[in-house]
Length: 488
Image (cartoon, rainbow, N blue to C red; front, side):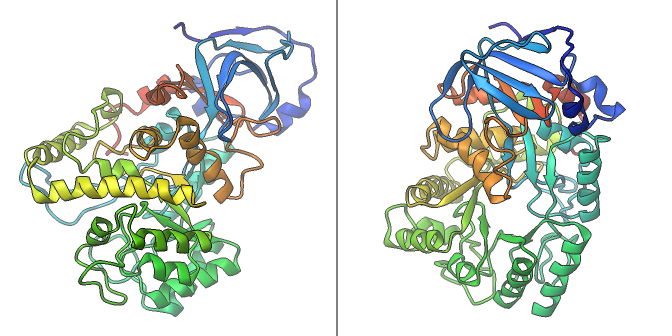
């Protein structure tokens, strides 16, 4: 299969309106652009998976004028005034909308075969992570929790202004967290009043989403939800002290990590306290066909609560998983790569441990519960939770989440792609602009070699990414961060 052939034919048609609407990439971006990057682009002979769940379209032409898609069809006349991309053998998809995509790296000091030392730290990856997301076809992210909130907020403005490279960014405020020493970079709430003030402060500072974390109380969560909703903003949660049914009754909008962190059936669960099992016991009991699962799914659907699937971060706890991807591992610093391989090898020497076996059972339960949730009318979105362990890296993990939705959760490729694109856009209220390949929408697209509708792993073969109509070279972006993730 040949690489895309790009031709540029000079044109006389006026493009002043398109140029006025199109943000000009800063000089830092120029070396990472693909082709001539004309304002008018024609994608010829391309396969389209449009993100809506509709049937795949073959041998289509897509015309992009400035930021937007203006025409799609099999018999669309080829313009003589545009940059022509011959994409025979390639597929165009909407850019992925990552709904649990951090900008930081999880760093465990002095990691070796015996483990690591405390404290676990979360240094910011403001240079490498945005490029890794964009290079892998992720054109919009929600950070789903921030440890350097001003960095995320300012990064959003710099990317939108064209002086830095990365996806569109929806910055989540710092975590809404109670007393805990899990991550010492987090604020500790002192009660419901503090939660209300916290939401108001960070909304005014530019955060567009909020995330409750493991040790929040019901009173604090309820106050945060009420304050956020008053500002027309949403709250998600990686919970533990508050169960899924309790959060549903409080009016939460979104729950993270599928069904992994629901603690309602944990044997030692006490009100407003995180259980020792942190949801593992609940998931072991909540088999997909159990009455408990049916009741929970019915409650979540009735309350219109979205679930974010983050299968890659849990698959990484299984022996021999995931399959190592050299292109992904090449982005890690030598120290980060060594730490990841230590942890992976230690896990693989415990193949018969009860904990590992239980983890495999729970992983299977969650994947099936996510499918049951969607079958019942639930709204599922996709993320990865990049924890810096080499298995869940920015962009690479977003692609793998789509693959796991197909291979492990049982969705069709077109269903999985919709979950990872249009569903996220809809939750963010941006479905009229992004999330699908449709006329009138922004040209936020990924172009991959092959056909993910028949071989879902072809979603890894990203060569060109368009954001706001600007075409980026995936390979060049990845080369610029080689060996740097974990450093900056």
